[in-house]
Amino acid sequence: MSRGRVRIEDGQKRVRVYLGGQVIADTTSPKLVWEKPYYPVYYFPQDDVRTETLLPTEHTKRSPSRGTAEVFDVKSSRHTAEQAAYRHTDSPIEDLREMIAFEWRAMDAWFEEDEEVYVHARDPYTRVDVLQSSRTIRVEVDGVTVAESNKPRFLFETGLPARYYLPKTDVNFEYLTATDTATHCPYKGTARYWSINTTGDAHDDVVWGYDTPLRESQEVAGYVAFYNEKLDIYVDGVLEEKPKTIFS
Image 1 (spheres, rainbow, N blue to C red):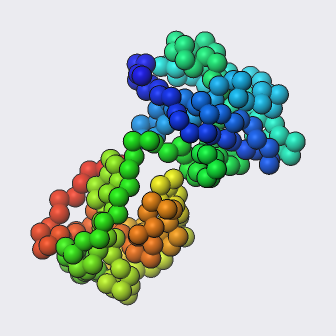
Image 2: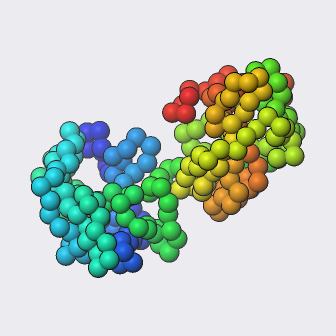
């Protein structure tokens, strides 16, 4: 269902959230609320939250669509997470008035069923497919070929352009420098990055790879991908138009 700019659906997974080794909330009836443009937030029925761990604060959280929320600190026996929970008691959306949400990063761990989930709640409409291909992918940077392969693996993820993952043996690492950057994805896992320098001007963090990707993305383990948005990528000899995304 949709309420103004907010989309709300009933979740089908058991969802638990932990703080300081304690279960703070545990429900089989979550609401998925698309507060963010790219992924949902889990809201828990009040009866499925250990409300004795919620300490009222003087802070509020305002939303033009969900109304003003009261904000709570969350206190376990070992730790207190400040301003880590909120409830839209007077929301114009009736479905949310008795629901409680938590700031993802403020909590220690999240589980969908018995599997830990990282970064944010998974969108049930996001799918990841990895397919082996024999198309030739060539990556050029400042006119220099830094990678070329006819054994790529294409990763298709809902809402994003196809990503071309190449075997490391088909990449000229002479031009790549590892960086300290790491990003995290609830569908793929933790990625590490490289910059490219062919002419003296560095292109920072434009190559990434997953050493130990999550289950649905295991086929790209040990491969690396290049930002379509920022580099010249040829598919079967044809220069691909740079897509416009949040990473452009």
